[in-house]
Image (tube, rainbow, N blue to C red; front, side, top):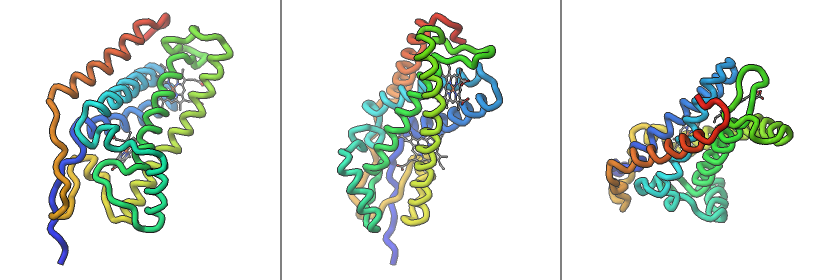
Length: 227
Ligand code: HEM
Ligand code: HEM
């Protein structure tokens, strides 16, 4: 007979809202560049920057599984997890597993590089990023190449991310997507796992305000057109 399952709250609302807004803004950043809507491209890039900063703050101020301390483990732990998984006996983690934890950091870092390099660029036609012209021509050219190449890195990381989720679905028969929508995972009845204790409701708006304030503050220093 199968064991009764119990619902455990894993992903808080700010993590879920962050994730799906991020997906939407990355798609928008890509599509707006393809369609040459550069003002929209710039603004969605600002949005990505605010989200990344928000997530960094939330990594210290959020609920249990949102915290870096919960999922950032030494690279040796990530290696051991991947090795055990390849042998069909990787341990189950309620939050991010040790390899997933590093992929979260890699995606956040890659997104930060993408959005920050963009601030210094021009499309050589009608659009200048707010900090375009601050750096020399050679550096700007290097940043342009980086903005371009880093997007390929981002696509690769997202591809890996989706492949890992697909692997969980097929090989481990675990749906990770639903919990990223509902916040809830199912565990065996006798498992000691419990709900992540809530934190004050005001923390997420405050973290978002700080993140937006930092981006707005940095943009206020720009010599070029910001909006
Ligand atoms: C996560 C956010 C961003 C993503 C995913 C992204 C993605 C891209 C991509 C795929 C390209 C095309 C590269 C090519 O033509 O080879 C591009 C070009 C460009 N992006 Fe972004 N970008 C982001 C943020 C920004 C921001 C914040 C700005 C400016 C404020 C910006 C300014 C530009 C400019 C000026 C170009 C044209 C450069 C060129 O012609 O090579 N981007 N971006
Ligand atoms: C632009 C594309 C995407 C980016 C940049 C991205 C980025 C991220 C990031 C940064 C996290 C960590 C969440 C956190 O702790 O705050 C995450 C987790 C997650 N994402 Fe995505 N994501 C993308 C697309 C998707 C899509 C399309 C799906 C669904 C099919 C998805 C499903 C998930 C799931 C299920 C998790 C939780 C993984 C786990 O249980 O450890 N993501 N993603």
